[in-house]
Image 1: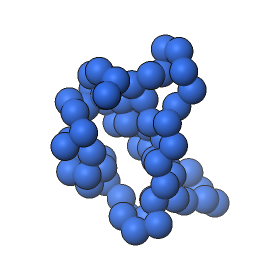
Image 2 (image 1 turned 135 degrees about the horizontal axis):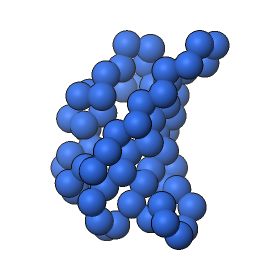
Image 3 (image 1 turned 90 degrees about the horizontal axis):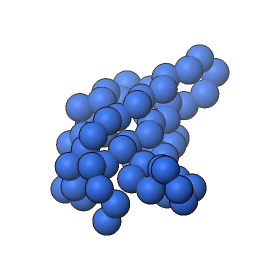
Length: 65
């Protein structure tokens, strides 16, 4: 996942959610889980693969750390 970027979501209800951008075209949800599980229990991974741009994802953890 070279070239990916991580930015914390805005404060409020999304304290446990991060944005992961600039992902490779062949990325899978399992690949994202394999990278982020060590930072805490993952509640959800919302992977967006839209035409015309690189995939991105939102990773939501069980608790903010």
